[in-house]
Image (cartoon, rainbow, N blue to C red; front, side):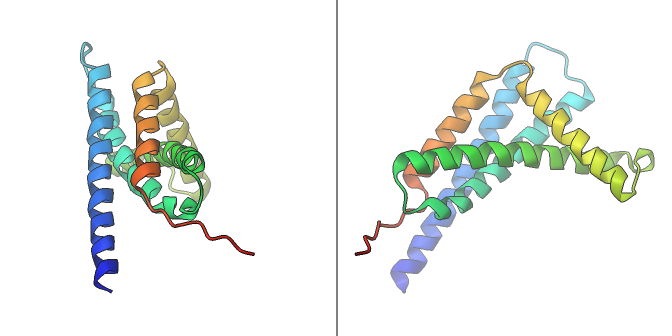
Length: 162
């Protein structure tokens, strides 16, 4: 029982450290992209959103890794890469949606269809902000995150059924 509790504490510490490192790295990459330009208010909010989205995506990726704990390294890494990219874009769109609705509440359509269309718009806007211009640093960081999760994430020994 004591070994199980210690293992969970170590896993939690590793997940939290991983999330903080990825969030700060995402934020630093975005700051580096805009270092030579004048950052307007929207760009500053996008930079903040990228950091928080990276942190949340890292936590979700770490948590979801238990679904592939019995697979090989390549499958765990590809699964982690897929989950990280999807979670990063989803959290980015969600945080952008929340930010815009919190800052400009009187300018929003609060009906269900209006909120749905606004959430789609914010998701695609965040996705385009991250993909245009191409940012190879983010792809490298996502790949490094996937490798880290595959190496240090949840693993279970394979069992052979006869």
